[in-house]
Image (cartoon, rainbow, N blue to C red; front, side, top):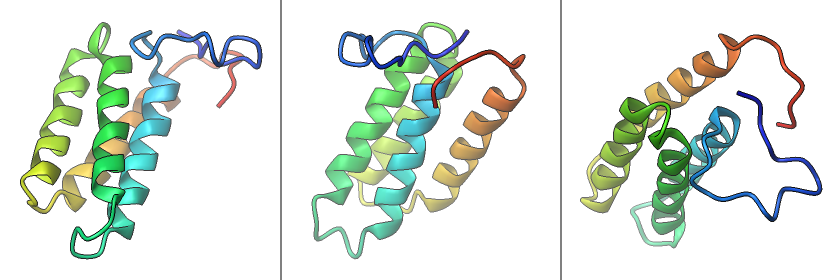
Length: 108
């Protein structure tokens, strides 16, 4: 499954279209936002949750187990529970999914 995020299709792509590459980008963004969070005083918490929701949408049809892990992380963030280790594990899993794919032409 290659990424459909070409220059012409980027804005036409549905957020629930299966794409492991886009899901990884969203998880990486969520983790970066979460790591920037200091005492949950900024909007980073909401942005990180949104990124995890987008990742879950990309995973849901073909990698439902990973969609559930994204959900687990955003629920922990909502409850102000520590999610740093789980986000790191989720990002590592997402990256392995990409690197285990046959090399196809895609835009990351």
